[in-house]
Length: 203
Image 1: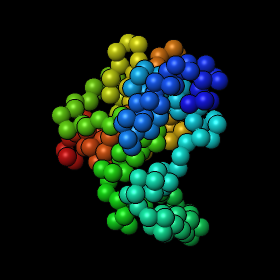
Image 2: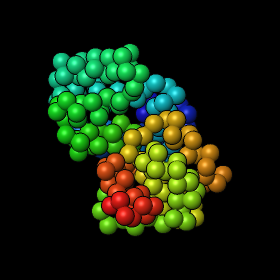
Image 3: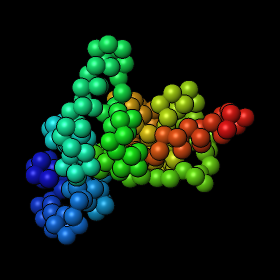
């Protein structure tokens, strides 16, 4: 919060109000509250990223008493082993799900807090191919991405596993001057929507 005040992203008054809300709304992160009061998602995340102030996902889960420090350590060791032996990488959260330490819904909630990205549900969502053309079918299928909405002023994009690299790549695809808002959804829902659009016989 202090970093964003120094960078003129928010005022001291906005920070004070957000901190007051945080005291009342237990378990809510400051970034979530700032997003709700209208601070652009990109500015919040850039401040966290560039100043290395983002709490690691594993630590968030420990802080929320979802997992124990020992369970976190076990998952970290497994992740390290996969990289060194199999040359493959799996996000820590997904490893925790695989190990049975956390369910996917909880993991998605933590990702939402971690990246200041709201969760959307896609059960009744119909994909518009015209919107999807902004990023391309192959890229969308490979990275499990949906262009959710474009109101002319801003574009909403749904991700399954957010990363700084993917967010920067997507910004290059989008028209200059448009605000991009990232949201999260269950990867299985994203795959179902993409397949029903591009490969309906596989669903």
